[in-house]
Image (cartoon, rainbow, N blue to C red; front, side):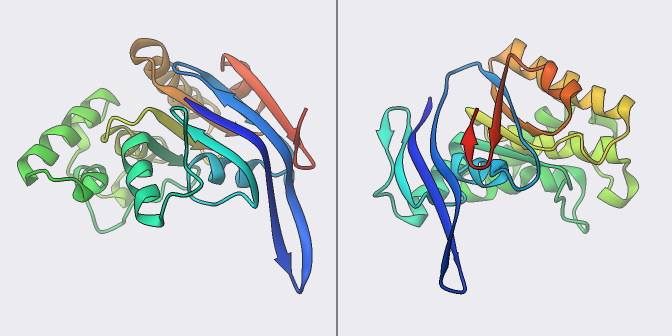
Length: 220
């Protein structure tokens, strides 16, 4: 599904080149559930941003469904992101003035759908993550675990091929963290959703099918 060949990424600070990724080779297949582990500063967030089409590599080849996307314009990449990739973050990133239902509907605004169609799809995903009775609550009225469930529903609403979860349990207690992991594992096993979990938690990583470790910009 996704293939990275010899990916390098550098940033330039005060005229100095700072290499972050140093020749990454990485493949992700349909139905994978992969943990990406590494210490702070190892390059895992940069790698996640490149996989998620949020950032460009300095050099190397990125293929999505066997199509190289280096020549794609920013609007083409935005459309690919919207259709293929769902994001879940440690800090949830829900809009505080919107209800759970409205937050989940957001990714569908870029598609040619009626409001009723968007609402129906968003409700289906909220029911799937166990939030049926809290759809009209705003984030401030929800617990951390409930907010993360809404965030997962938002990631799912466009039926993406891949979910990228960046420290999805980092802001949660142990019990709630396990509930979120159980939800992600269920999506992977029951629906074949491909999931990449960035984590520094060995317990979280041990529940994934594969564990990939990054250190100093290289996969080890």
